[in-house]
Image (cartoon, rainbow, N blue to C red; front, side):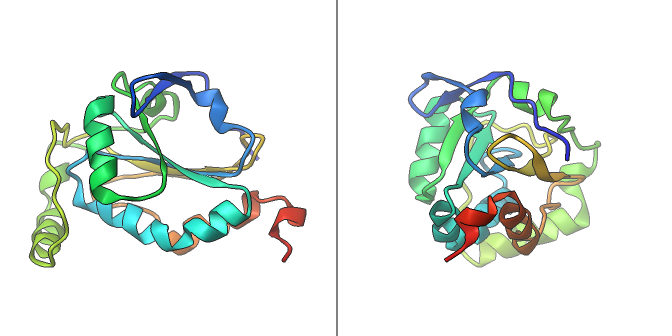
Length: 182
């Protein structure tokens, strides 16, 4: 099993330094966002929310990284109301360290992306615009308390996110057997 290397410094929503190595020690679902206005990212975060109790009861957490400045991320986190650990990475050190790429010229403007964005808006999904780099791709990583990866999903397009069932399967594999027993 490969180990995720967390040797960079992030910022919490108050702007205080948060060494990424603090993410070790607990099984973690780590979500790197595309940008704060990404409806696909918002939907993915909403789909993870029903699993918060299971994750926390197993001693784990969901951590979300955005390249938005801490003050923008704080407003976004408050608007969505998800009980996640929100971290800012304006320098994108985490994206570089974990080889999270950028999309091609047509990436955010594919017919599938436009259709999903429009249908999301019509269903009343919140669009929270911020300064955005629409070409930045996102990723999901799941690792155990020692940083051993059980899942690494680097998005290939704007709407490419792993199914939550796959994320949860990887999370359960990251939990020590004793912690997963009732």
